[in-house]
Image 1 (cartoon, rainbow, N blue to C red):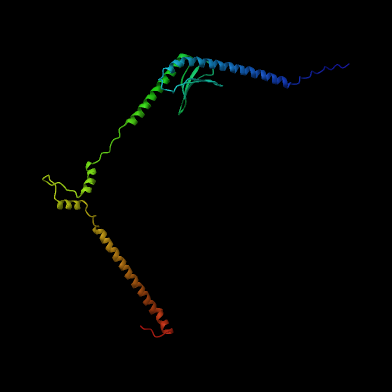
Image 2: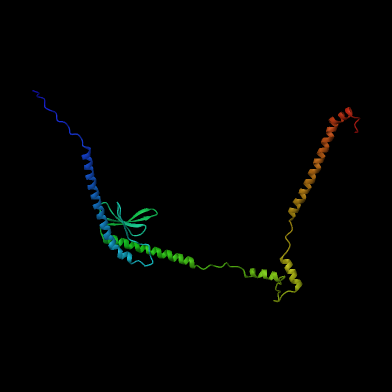
Length: 247
């Protein structure tokens, strides 16, 4: 007889059973998440009911505020385009946020619906005041009178007087000047352009003198160079190849 104990075989893993178990756990988790989401939606709907009278008191021509309950993985109750209320991780605490240029700002956080409603009311009041100030500023800019430029009234009369004829300047006795005096006054008014100064004329004379002096010096240098070349070399070549030199 064989006295050795029979070894127990380890059970083989069953993939189908593991898949069924994973599906059950996933369904339970999804059901729990759905229940939590429904809890959040219910609390936000309760807050929406409390905020409707507050937003309804806004002026009829203001369309900035529109309560909207957004569903999703993280439900939110929007007050306007930049402010909303959501629930904290405990699903009991309301959080009132506002998106600004510097990021998201937490305005209020409380488990009380009345406290969050009061914070939203203060927010709506501030937004309405900002809108009134912006409208008033735009109205003042549009209604600002155009300040006319201060001009000399004589500046507008001068072209007309010039078109009519020579200007007649008043005399000491209060009357008008005669025709010849008016012509002289007009001639003095439109005087000829000032003459060039003495320094400028002197500079022109000096420049002409220097040009003439340079020309004469160049002619003398050319003549001197030709004479030196003649006496040093060309004279002998002339005497050797042509005839006796003339000088």
